[in-house]
Image (cartoon, rainbow, N blue to C red):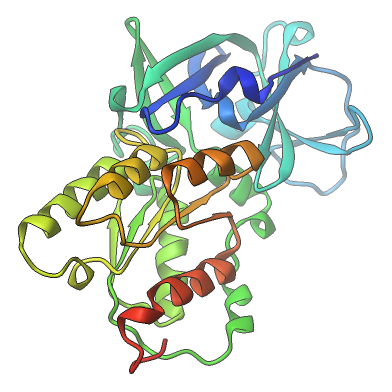
Amino acid sequence: MREVKQTEILLESGTNELEIMEFTIAGELFGINVAKVREIMMAVPIKRMQQSHPDVEGVFRPRDEVVTVIDLAQYLGLPPSEFPERDIFIITTFNNLDFAFHVHTVVGIDRISWTRMQKPDPLIYGGNEGVATGIAEFEGRLITILDFEKIIAEINPQTSIQFSDLDKLGERRRSEKPILIAEDSMLLGKLILESLHRSGYVNTIKCDNGQEAWDFLCEAKASGDPIESHVACIVSDIEMPQMDGHRLTKLVKEDQVLRLTPLILFSSLINDAMRLKGEELGADAQISKPEIARLVSLIDELTAHLDESDPV
């Protein structure tokens, strides 16, 4: 068993780089952001659970915790391992929950720029709600970056955004304040937009990555209009192709026109180390998915000064 320590994976803040752990399933190459990986270990016997999701192999107890094992080959519709005795568990942490993904081999770790990450072709990777968030090119290899949050949300919907959590906010009023969303996961992007609309924020702009969000902000600046007429608050994921959320935060907070625009990092990667990076870059708030009611409350607080006469 090898723990992947934070000191090994944290890159200089805002450099728009990441480290990808390459792994294979049935000979096909996939990748996961190392920031999501807690440790890797050889596959071990597990306890099977009756009436569980068909892609859940079972559970095991590596220390004083019970970890759910997800069979990625089964989920992706790929053949099982030819050498199961060599298989690997990649133990991850999402939204402060641990899951083990059963893969066939781990190839290694590569450091690449988000600019080398391309959006997947929806015709090949399952349409607009496909399982891939990006395709990375590295030394002639194409690595499919899987949408692990979507996989977990499908297997255990309770770990994803719940509209019912918005009920605690009480009665809401319609607000036209423009909210810019940067989120690469199609599933989570739809859930965030729907949550904001249900909360009264009907003027939303959705971007699939930080680069698209930055292009929008640059166009807003060039218009000469007050920037708040185009964007009152930015909500950004961290892990995105082309430009990640940390790089976007760095650009926004170093810009003389945009720096006062509130920016919230809303990501499954938020932990102590990532929170420190966000603070260094100037993020106004950072919260872990799926705390959607907290996100809406933060938008309320950070934009309240823009229109005191029209409370949200």
